[in-house]
Amino acid sequence: MSDEFETTVEVTRGTGTSDRDKFRTKVTAPDMETLTERVRELREEVEDWAEDFRTIQPDGDQRHLSDDQSTLGGDE
Image (cartoon, rainbow, N blue to C red):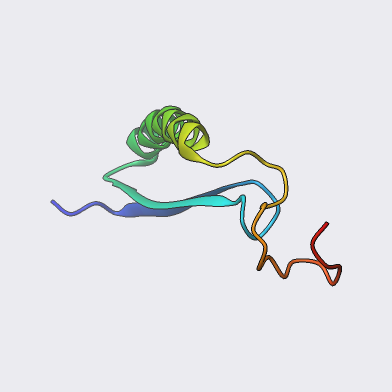
């Protein structure tokens, strides 16, 4: 029997172009009750994944590269 219900869950963390993590996952199930449970379980996993990604991400401050062109100002 094939799953009749399907949803795509997309979670975005962060707002800038260099500090954003996006998780996109498809969840399927044979019925709504199972789909709801699977989405709940997925949410818990994605929270753990997001925490893992935060620990490997550089600090949220500006990049400290001399060729950083995110602003029009020169090096200081």
